Length: 126
Image (cartoon, rainbow, N blue to C red):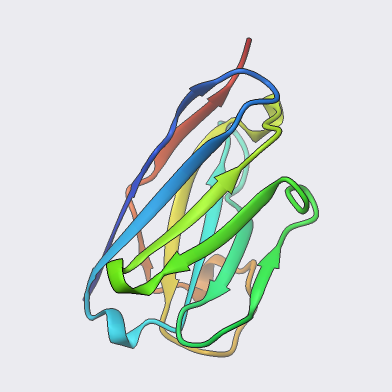
């Protein structure tokens, strides 16, 4: 079993920044990949960014956030971060982190992931 807890959401003005954290616990050694997803009201869950937990490299972004968001990991504290800069109103959503146990798979497919956090709200508004 893997537990994921997100934090760092909040209200920010357009052009501002936030850093989300995803703290993992439990059977951390079984994790292969971790991604961030987001879901706005009335919309499907959307993949944002992903990172391989077990090796170097392997960082991927959706086109909608490339150049503005950065995903990173700190393995000693079992945490994955999502640095979000130049935030836009369309970034408003609940942000979730998700952990997958399989090395191969489609990054943007929710079905790839075995564990999910409870989500943290990000609101971008003036």
